[in-house]
Length: 400
Ligand SMILES: Cc1cc2nc3c(=O)[nH]c(=O)nc-3n(C[C@H](O)[C@H](O)[C@H](O)COP(=O)(O)OP(=O)(O)OC[C@H]3O[C@@H](n4cnc5c(N)ncnc54)[C@H](O)[C@@H]3O)c2cc1C
Image 1 (cartoon, rainbow, N blue to C red):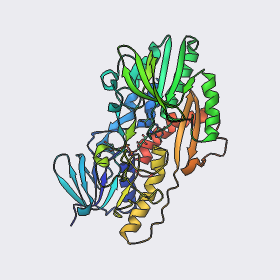
Image 2: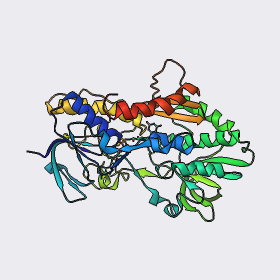
Image 3: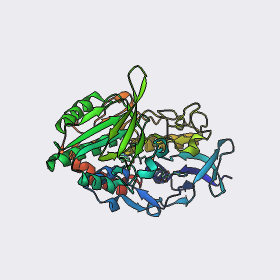
Image 4: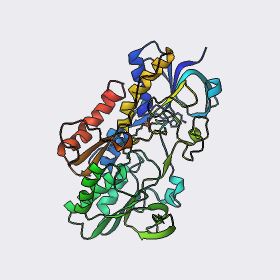
């Protein structure tokens, strides 16, 4: 007999929601959750922390408090997968067998791909909301900024919360406007992408926001090197014909969003999509079942599904995994269908937010009966107060 009927890899947003929902459907299931971290983070609020409008301490809680009743927490990290034997091996050397596996290990932040970054991150005006320990430093950088360039970068790989590189930039623009500093400073977006946002409806609003703060946009620019002491950053510029050049830019502050990929232990495993250098887990984009191992399902930031990698996406994926996994266990047809829903609460200033909601192929999928393309105070209040409450009280416990 296997150690666990269902083994969940990763006790983050996706792993906990899925385990909790499975147990709400059938409390007799024997579920193990492998998760190395003592702490659980509500990452979406780090944008607001960086803008000085949310307490960092309210973004972290003890993992133990959110392990669903009836599940076993295995405090370890998976090192390798042996799907032919229905087994994983952990960093500790311990092995666990399963009947079914749910992989939800999140995304890897590839800081090492930017030369000089590790040495200077968290000082010299170099910051990132992508780490718990530096989100508060972003606001410090903003408060210290009196003149010069404030740079916000966005890499060429898929990232968690594609809007996050811009949200903090708009908060910075609004902060500088309120403090009468917009004419002494210059806010820049340096993006490896080619346009401001993939969904035309929301892009139209964002272009107006960019104009409001006098932000200069530079597309086709990938951050490749940084020297914090000299306050210089270097970008690789790829022109539309594919020719490459290098550009040096001086900064007072720089908010870095690093390139991202599936965690290395996933990349190097049989679960990864063959030939994909970023190593995403290979699942069917609608059923979320692994394409080669039918007893494995995956969700969250680590899969190859072409949706916006967000907690909002996880919220729609978890019930699909639960429905399809339970059907598969009974030998039934998989009816659960994930249509690529993801949401990006685009903070455009203090008290202003555009709630972008869209699915596969950038199909707009809005919740509210009003024009969500507009900046709204109500949507800001949703992000600042309602969503964090929902996360801690309803989503992680599988009730929403
Ligand atoms: C700055 C920022 C802003 C964001 N804003 C938003 C937003 O406004 N709206 C939104 O919906 N989403 C937002 N997100 C994205 C959201 O946080 C993620 O999409 C969501 O957390 C994905 O869930 P996940 O379970 O896939 O990954 P995570 O929640 O990151 O969980 C992955 C888990 O796997 C564990 N793990 C890692 N390695 C191993 C291993 N070897 N073995 C076992 N477990 C392992 C980790 O410890 C972690 O607990 C934001 C993220 C950031 C960083």
